[in-house]
Amino acid sequence: MKNTVIVLCTLLATSLLMAGGDFSPNLSPVADVSAKVCKENSIYVEKDVQLMWQDQHYTEAENGAFKRQKSIGKAGTYRHAANYCQRLNYAGYGDWRLPTSDELTHVHYKKGQVFTYFRDNDFWSSTPTVEGKYYVVFPTDAIRYARSPRQSNFIRCVRCTANDK
Image 1 (cartoon, rainbow, N blue to C red):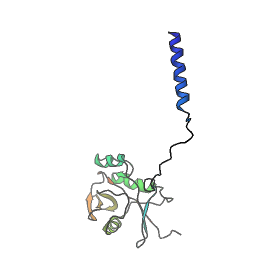
Image 2 (image 1 turned 30 degrees about the vertical axis):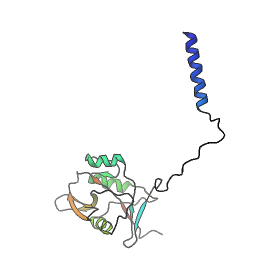
Image 3 (image 1 turned 90 degrees about the horizontal axis):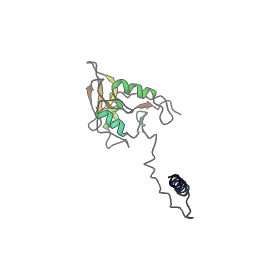
Image 4 (image 1 turned 180 degrees about the vertical axis):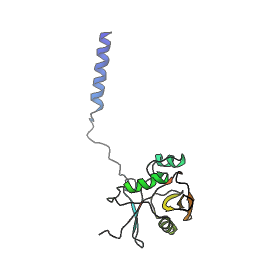
């Protein structure tokens, strides 16, 4: 029994040592990674109204939060959305905010899709309604709709570029 354990330990140690080494002089070439895959901190700038928009990938967790009426990252309740934008440090800027319904309508009214990362669902705005709700904007038709602040919607933050140098 003792000899069997010693032989097994020796085989295991030898296997681990050999697995870590590469004895071939030619290694396989490294695959090129597309720039689009590595795109981080994407933005869309609306020069005509001096606004910079967050244009960031939506994760599966955020998509799930939206579907389950939860709050994670760029999806959640109105309160979560307002806090998310206020605390956002993105693309080298820390002065992000939740856009107004007019700003969201303006950017989604443009012909074609201006964002690299988009969702075909409602996005929160900071504009309140008279019923204690907040407006969301559906990007496909650029029309605003009133939603309960407890509902989960997607989030896209914005900042003003007027004072940028």
